[in-house]
Image 1 (cartoon, rainbow, N blue to C red):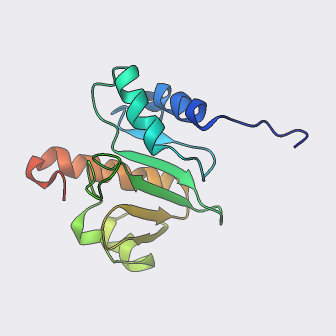
Image 2: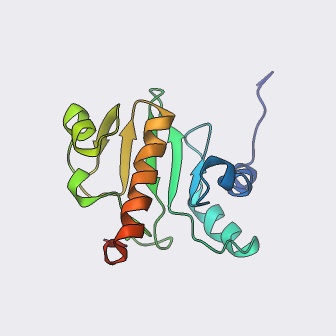
Length: 145
């Protein structure tokens, strides 16, 4: 591993939590520059320790193909309920049909369960998270689903 720096997953998550307002002014989106980081347990612990007032809703990271994922933060460690799911109308839609529907270039998919989506670029994945946050702000009843 010459030239590669081993990063402790907790440190990676803590750094992302501390920089979250630089990624999005809402502070509700984390960005990881590499995929495969086990983040959930660390995130829940760090939110408490760092007194994060507004719960983080999304995590963005690259997949093994160099495309980007937007993953919803679950409501808790052992639940499939999300703090905020991707929009219902996007779920199960793919590729160009999803890009047209969402108005976001480069969409790849949103899982039928609404917990994860994909885009060809980091900017596109970020836009998927932002649009979801905006929709939730306009319609609080659509929160968790």
